[in-house]
Each structure stands twice: as C-alpha cells, then as structure tokens.
Image (cartoon, rainbow, N blue to C red; front, side, top):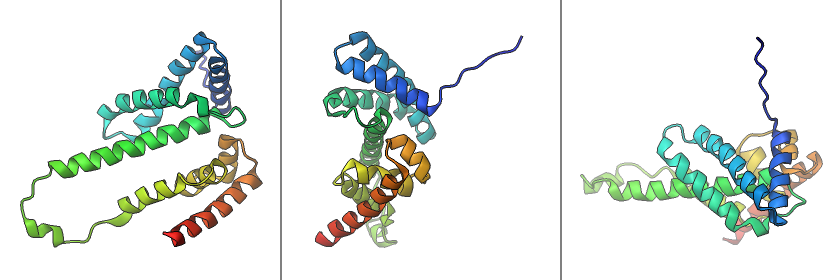
Length: 189
C-alpha cells in the first residue's frame, strides 16, 4: 500500500497562519487558538534547528515567542506576511536567550587567574553581532528584513521576496538603502 505524505510548502504555511491570525484578530477565538497551536509546531522546528546543542532551551523559547506574538498581535499589519512578522519576533527571542546565557555563563565562571583576562583580546564578533542587531532594529521593516534575510541569513533575493512579500527589486533597494542608513547611523555614533 502506497503511503501518501502531505508536506505543506512555505506558501501554504503563510496562507494558513495568516488566515488564522487575521480571523483571530477579528474575534474568532477558535481560529486564534488554532493559530497559536500551529505556530507552536513551527516554532519548535525553528528553534530545534538552531539550538541542537541546547535542547532544554527550545520549549522556553517557544513559550516566550508565543507570549510575545500574543502581546504584540495588535502590531501585525495585514499587508505584510505573517511569517516575516513572526520570524522577526522569534529571531529577537533567540538573540535575547543567547544574551542571557552569555551573561549567566560569564557570572558562573570561576576567576582562577586574575591575569588571564589580559591573555588574549576578546573576540569582538559577538559584540559586533549585538551592535548590528540593535542597529537593524532602528530600520523600518522594508530595509531591516531584506538585510537580515539576504546579508545575514544568506537567502537569495527571490527567497527573501517570497518570505517578506516584497518584490525582488524592492528587496534589492531595501538592502541598498538599509546599508546606507546603517552607515549613516554608525557615523552618528
């Protein structure tokens, strides 16, 4: 007997989540409950792929993200893809978790040798990443999302266009203008 498997495409996921979210925002409690339930499945997969070495953090991040989505639901604009909006929230929750972990890990490390602090310069990659996330948060979505997806996550312009709902030229323009805006903001600092 042939086994038939059905796999939802990213477009199917976008349509389903957006429909449920919009219906939920319009007052349909059952649709909103289904939205949160479906979203939790997608979030678990999203966080598991990124936190293979930290499986205990996955469920906490799923719950934090669901709570943030719920608390920020009124900020969702129906003219933008739901998955992009959700991805931005999930991404920030992930970054916050890494920040918390790095602070608590640093506090728990023993100070065996006081001179060890001068042994090697700090790797500024983590610090740079935190600065970049803060700077990107200052940009509008039409610039921030293309930079995030194309430049940081390595997605193609076409993939980013599909994910964000922008046209391919708008993605290219968003990256270009966003990078210029970031350069200006860096000079101001």
